[in-house]
Length: 406
Image 1 (cartoon, helix red, strand yellow):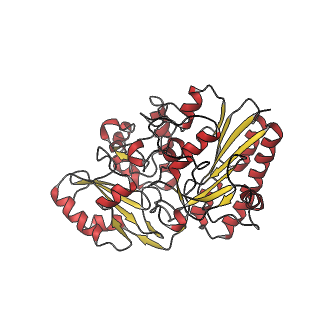
Image 2 (cartoon, rainbow, N blue to C red):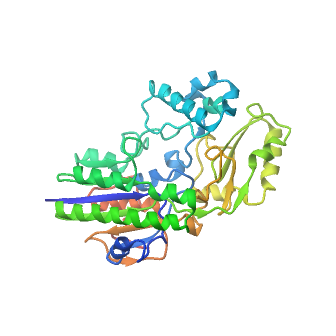
Image 3 (cartoon, rainbow, N blue to C red):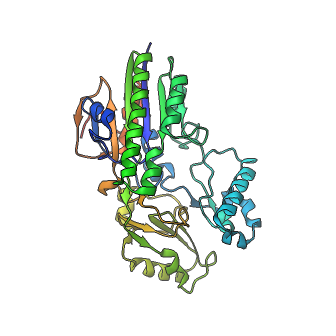
C-alpha cells in the first residue's frame, strides 16, 4: 500500500456542471476538496499548460495545425486530384484513413490528423505538437510531468488516445486491471462530455445524462483507488468549457467574393472559432483585413491581446492574422465541421464564463474550499508536482495551489 496521485482530464467539463442531482459523487467530493474555475490558455491545445506550466508561445501550441510546407507530413496528399474534395462524406473519410496509414509508415507520431482540410492543401500544413502527452519531447525544451516522473523512476498509468478509448467505461475497465501499487501516478483522459457537448450543447438533457454516467464511473475509480492505496490524491480538471452556439459566420463565402487567389495570394485555416491567415501579397493583407474587420461576431486579435494571451511566437506559422469569434458564434463551414454545425463549441477567449473549466483537488494536503475566482490552468502543473513531492523545473516560477491560493 502506498500513495498515488490520480489525474482525470475530464474533457470539456465546465466549472458549473457539478450539481447534487446529476453529479452526486462529484458534488459530495467537492465539499471536501479545493475546487474552482480554471482558465485555459488560448486556443484549442492547452495540454502544455497543465502538464508543463507553459503558455502557447512557449510550447508552440494553441492550434492543431500550423502553416509549415517544409515539414508537412502530408506530402503524399499533393498527388490526390482536386475532385477528391467533392466526394461524399464516406468516400472522403476512407481516403483520409488510407492517407494517414500511409503517412504513419514513415512517421509514428500518434497525434496525426487531417481534420477536414482540403486534400490539395494538406501538404501546406504540419502539426506542431505531434508527440503523445506522455512521450519525451512533448514540449521541446521543457519538462512535462511525465518527464519528471521518468527522471524520478516513478511508475505511472497512462490512459488516453489514440491507444485507448477515452470513454469513462474504458477508463473504469482499465483502472480495474491496472490501478495497483507500485504506481505513483495515473492519468485518465475522459472524452464523453466533449462529444456530447458539441452535439447537443452544454445545457441539454443529453449533457445532464452524460454527466451522471461519468460521475458514476469516477466514483468507481475513486473507491477502487482507496481500496488499493493507503493515500489517494484525486485531481479532476476540465481542459476547457463549452458554450452554446447560436450564430454562424460564413468566412469562406466572404473570402470567395474577394479578387484573390488561394495559395498565390494567401492561405487560411478555419478552426471553428478562429480564422487564421497567411498573406503572400500586400493586396491580400489589405482586402482580407478589411473584410474581417467588418465581419460582425468577432474581431481581429490585437497586439495587446497577443501579449495577454501569450501569442508572441518567434515565427508566423500560426498565422499573420487571427480573427477570433465572439462566444456563441461559430465559423461555419470550417476545416473541422463541414457537413453540419455543432451545437456547442469551445476555443473562445478564456475570459468567457462558459469557456472556463472545473478544477477539483481532493487531498489531505489541500485546504478544503470552493473558490469563485478562476485560476490559471498553468498552475495545475506545479500543484501536481507538489502532490507527487517532485520539484518543479527551475524555469517554472508558478506557485502550487496547495500552498498559495488566489
